[in-house]
Length: 291
Image 1: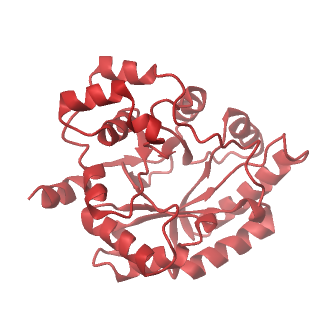
Image 2: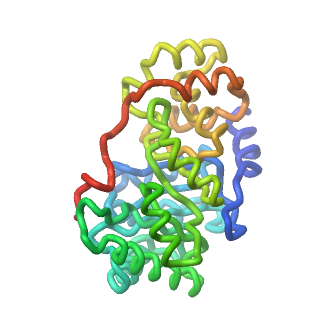
Image 3: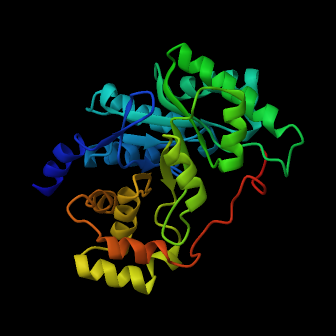
């Protein structure tokens, strides 16, 4: 009964992007999901559990498995919100358009709901970083104008990258997907996005083991008869951030959806917000591999 109730409830939980497109309030991440039968099975199980937002990327090398799972699902394609991303090596105008063609071919689908720039070119790595990001964004805008994608956005962009993009284009990203979890909430980026009407998605919403074993989170979880993972996800949702948990295990997939039947108090939210830096990946636009 709980699973069926969640499916019905999930259909009515979404956010509106700045172009009017609706996006589910929680998603399923596929990073490290293999591009084989196991990967297909994981995405199929996620859809069966109630996930409607599926997040992949060229970098993950599993677009074929994700696309096949969506195509073989009993859920209508129109109910699935699919995201993929252009890889760093493919940034630039012409290369982004070609990369999109490869992605949509690998996925085997007619359109993509959300297309993201996976990482910005940064000043620490490129003297022409502004131009690289601008030309990549110009290609994304063309894909949007042509109706091949329903929304476009960015990933891992800090305020300086967003500001530079705004200087070159009137099209505001619909989404910025960043690392976001207790102990690493990137408040300046979060505020910059929310002031501009950019929806924030959170990758690695559970952080690392140090986050899940945090005594404060354990105490709050016990008070709600929930797991620390569920508290992390609920905290993100109450910040209007879309968390993208990932798992290959069906039971954990289900547990990660069971976060709409409780709320964290203002005091609990403030305590979590004030956690010291914990469980961050250390990945930034300045140190990420350019390939």
